[in-house]
Image 1 (spheres, rainbow, N blue to C red):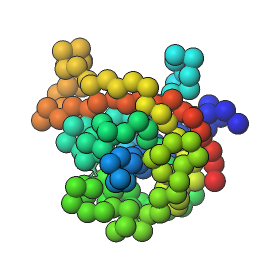
Image 2: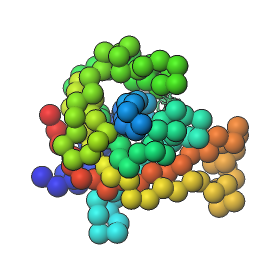
Image 3: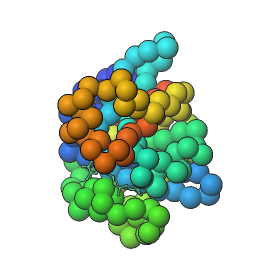
Image 4: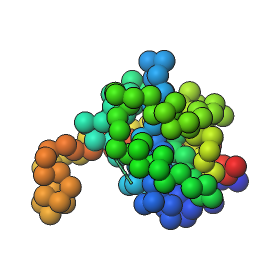
Length: 163
Ligand SMILES: Cc1cc2nc3c(=O)[nH]c(=O)nc-3n(C[C@H](O)[C@H](O)[C@H](O)COP(=O)(O)O)c2cc1C
């Protein structure tokens, strides 16, 4: 099954929250994401996630070459998504506290979240800090009033699968 069979599922469920999980430096952290995209460029299936500079995930992903996206389709992980989206891995071990199990990925070092149903394993092929000079002023005002911009990470989808 190729990656695009699941793209509609990803785009439908992403706004409800997904787990972006990164392993680096012997540490694993997960955070909730709601924005992202999926596409086909450089002759590859690509998923793109957006991480603000203030996140602990930013520190980790800068040292990593991969990330995973795990989506709960059936399971109710609202509480876990809410906490993973408000507490920082700098302060707590989110996986341990939320009893989320890191399951080894098939193709990359960053693990997936076992309790989820749909998984994307991505190898980072390009990163792109948002350039405020080139951004629509309304978006700048609405999303970046504090100056905490996103870095966009484009990952080649090496595996995508449903549980
Ligand atoms: C529904 C939801 C969606 C979110 N989407 C993003 C996102 O796409 N990018 C981002 O940088 N932060 C996003 N956040 C905020 C982070 O998940 C939050 O700041 C988290 O505590 C960061 O964790 P970390 O410091 O362990 O990386 C979202 C939060 C929620 C609740």
